[in-house]
Length: 482
Image (cartoon, rainbow, N blue to C red):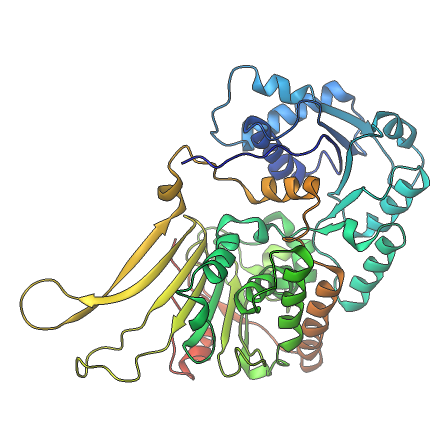
């Protein structure tokens, strides 16, 4: 089955930081795949803008290399790459000065959608917004895309919001979180709100607990300097895991509308209980076969920054009071896996006597092998009485849509949503600030107490204390498995 491709309006997309790693690995290959799918209008153009001194021909060579390396194995007709490269342009530009801005103004067409992707450090967001305004490149239909980290704390997030709001309306600002562009994340909403089977059971009366796991096998790598200033809390929990929690816990919006969805997500963040320090486990990975320990990797033998965090979170509203949400994320773990697990309560009474505890478990796999599995209880085949076993009803998206199906990358989908003007899968300013307002006291508490992360074995499932976090509640983590 191949999904129906809906072309977007004609556009000029300017990528500030157009020679950076994100552009090379994600943005440009994603645009190429959309071009192959027939979703980019023939006249659409992409303009790279960065400090590097090159011309458009040099940039096309850069783009071609990025597509060959990261474009995947999507089959395109002969000449497709050449056609895509024809739409590439480049302008050397100074984000804080005047160099290159006249050339950019001359390239931008007045009668198409204008989208500006800020694939740069957050410290340049305000400067770019100002220069776009000064040079008359903005209008009511202009859109800007900003990458995380959106601030380091509440104060800095508010300052960034003010800087952007000075030149752009909130309806023009797209704060991107690529997790929200994943097919499975959107299917989570479809499963919840499109099926009578689940929504009546989606509350504390029937759900025992929910686990959200984002596990990585890699260490900090070349991001050591950045990561040691952020840690797992700022880098993952405050944005990615928070967004997944919101989609799991939010009330049904009145309609599938950007502000209606984001209103409900905001309510969840504001309903989060203040964190009990005993409900948090922090860790740093030890040395392993695949590299040095965390402190060596970041170059600070006294670092107290966490590469792993596990939390027990409460949501105090009518739907979820009393149902714990267990969140965990970390680097250098046993397997790369992102999964949301909804564990339903056991039957009040079993007619089959005292057997093992059988529960329905809904597992939403974000990566790898995106899909949804529902565990159900059946009779074990064969003679010997009524013995119960649990079996999965498994829907792998690769199987469901076929090998030639349109398995769109998150960045592809989100960039096309920007061109369409659809903000449903992007964070709103008040949402970001609410997330920081909940996160800041947790981090400040660690610093005030001088908390030191627990060391965990590289390639393991994390610190032993994280196991105890659930064991105290007579629960266990789902196994981290690819």
